[in-house]
Length: 439
Image (cartoon, rainbow, N blue to C red; front, side, top):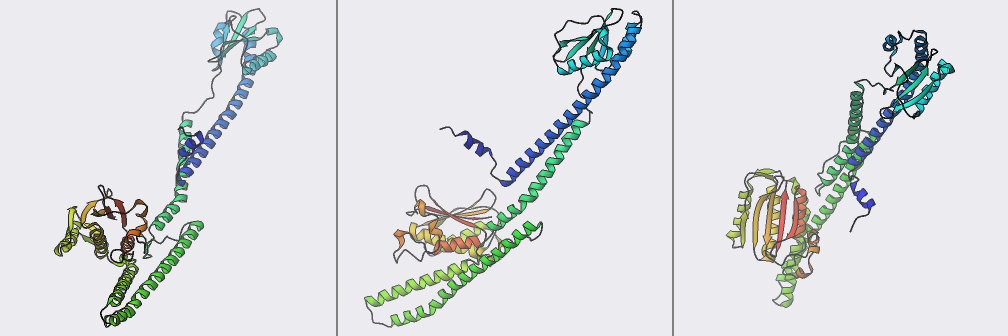
């Protein structure tokens, strides 16, 4: 189906503000420059024509008077002296032509006729239209015909003028480019600062300098960032405090439950208390995950790091294997990264029966670690949802496998706090692939 013209035209319109400003300013400058040049040429043209007509009128009257008073034998010798850049005299009737075409030629003929008088029987013919060339015929008092051939010249232009115009346009475009860059740079910096906001509240602070509008925007953004960071820290502190304080009464309840006689009710009560302890531990871990960026980054060998993690699992008999390695070093926060990978490997073993770990490099040279399994996977519509806190899939809400719904949320928040990214995707042939990317 063919798109409407308006839709195609809209798609040609740049999407970025900088490109739109460039286009508008550059087009406006070029149009203004073209208009200025056009007006300048028109003014020069009208002035040159006016001066030329006035000069020719006077000079032709003088030249005709000289030729009229010279003997016929001496007239050819004077033709070269009376010749000008845009006209010359010819002894004789001239060429056959058509009636005068241009208004300029008719005006000049009328002016010459007025200047020399009716006795010379002045009339004109157009000999050539492109380029313009016309002849004005006169008859001297002795009856000799004489012809004035006019070849209008263009407006004289200095050799340096086109170069000056090009340099002027280039200067205007350069100034426009600088102005657009200065106007859009704060927006780009603001976008980068927004993208850098993380739960730990360690995002980039914008410099509060420059024009007053930019300084006010930077001040407002920094204040907003501080309020968000303070709010997040308060919420996480409340969550951590509640989770920590619940451990003591849960422990007392467990001790009291264990002192009861054996029975179904005692077992159920202990199972509920175990689930509550697990939820409290996960809550504390989630609260602390926002501060994963507090760990100092170090340079490590990614292959050795991943091998050590996989070997730890293999030593206790877990079905975890290493399927890919990389060369070189990477700068990471090892404790936070290890915690994320442990969480992902535990999920892969728990739901997929086995885990495959591989390290690779991104196109930009960053570190990429994948944890794959052959489990039932996750529906496409829930790949993003399972990364949210306390979200559990409908099929995994049992006490045995459901968990607290915080495992992937903890891993996601840890990755954000250390400047990385965690994504989930379907695996070819069935299963799930969790990808950790660090710059």
